[in-house]
Amino acid sequence: MSEGEQNPVRTFVSYSWTSPAHETWVLDLATRLRADGVDVVLDKWDLKPGHDAYKFMEQMVTDATVTKVVMICDAAYAEKANARAGGVGTESQIISPELYSKSTQDKFAAAITECDDEGVVCVPAFYKGRIYFDFSRGEDYESQYESLLRWIVDKPRFVKPDLGRLPQHLASPDAPQLSTEPKFRRAREALREGAGNARGLFQEFCDIFSSELEKLRIQRAEDVEFDEQVVASYKAARPYLDQLFHLVRAICRFSNDPMYAEQIARLLEAVARYMFRPESISSWNAWDFDNFKLIAHSAFLGCLAVALQDERFDVATSLLGRRYLVQSEAGGARGSQGYYLFLQPAESLEHRNGRLNLRRQSLHADLIKETFSHGTLSLETVLQADFVAYLRSVRFTDEDRWGWYPVSLMWASARSRPFEIFARSESKRYFNGVKQMFDVSDVDDFRTKLIDGFSKRKPAFTYGWFDVDQLLGTDKLGTLP
Image 1 (cartoon, one colour):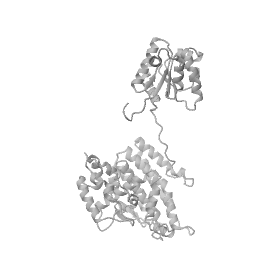
Image 2: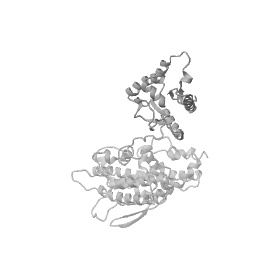
Image 3: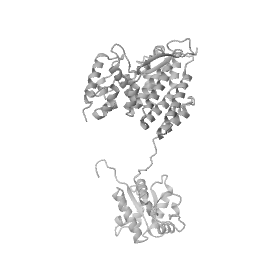
Image 4: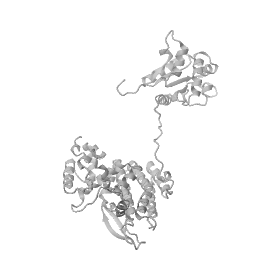
């Protein structure tokens, strides 16, 4: 046995000496199972002259090292088992209580080789009503053999998926029923199946998603601190964001239609409009839309994170490279901006930090960690997205101003390894997918243009800075084919 290989499954085959032809059939089955890695115990091989036949059979049925027992059932086997006659009868007396007394009943299975005149399978009375493998029809032999082998080695054809989390709107007793839920489910199913109406269903989700955010607009309450309302509103948006990220993931995995990237971007534009004064509001202050600033930031980062996680660098490039049209202030156009539009300061969080004497470096970063440590996306994937957005900003934003400040990367200040897409970019072939996000020709071009950017612009957190070379794995980029 090679190193690391598991011990073979030990299996006892019980059968009746009905005829030479039947014995040959059993021997062929046992031989094939052994060839496929099953340690078959068979009387013809293992019961030697002078051995105690009863003790041998009892040991094969009750021994913990024999994890599977296959009963080859024809008419003679069933008859002898019911009558408790011969060796089969002896084995049946041992098997029957084992079968009924154990809480787990996956050690015994019948392989049927014969049916009676009415087409009823021949099995002992104690086994009736249980699952069996039907070899009575020769044309089904291969499929039945495959099923038997899978059962013996515990490698089922269909594996139960891992148990996921309850949707947030169900897990939290205080969460309202989302109006987006029906549209979300229909769009997700259509995307997974590649249905022709998937784009239309996704657009319907986008439309209701953007309109639902209006429910999160804060109405000031005299008895509640406004920053408390901001945080509560942002948390209430999480289940909506989870739905969006699920659908973006389905798009990345099941469709190559470039129009989906445009739809995602249009939805992000719709979310961004909430960061500014709508026509219906004539009196406001700078804090009034802080909840939407946090929501828009998380929405963009999450969509980018999904695209990177699924290695859809075309989608990521589209999100990073386009201009976003924002309309606000009584419907007037504010013009277009790059993705840094989605990073607007939520000043009420600074007030909250001081009011509660929290002494946190960044409450915005704290909220990101809290949001993405328990939701659809992991914090790791969001940190990676924030880093990519920062790199793109270094590459293309003017020197005298910041395009993207990587808020969440305070959680990467002690990190000593590269993010996944850059660790994989040790391969030039993989880097060829990554490079499109930065509009560079090769690894050398990437190093030159990005290092120049870093030397001129390094934002500093109050506690220090993250190590760009560590997060990039700079020395190993493109060192393999």
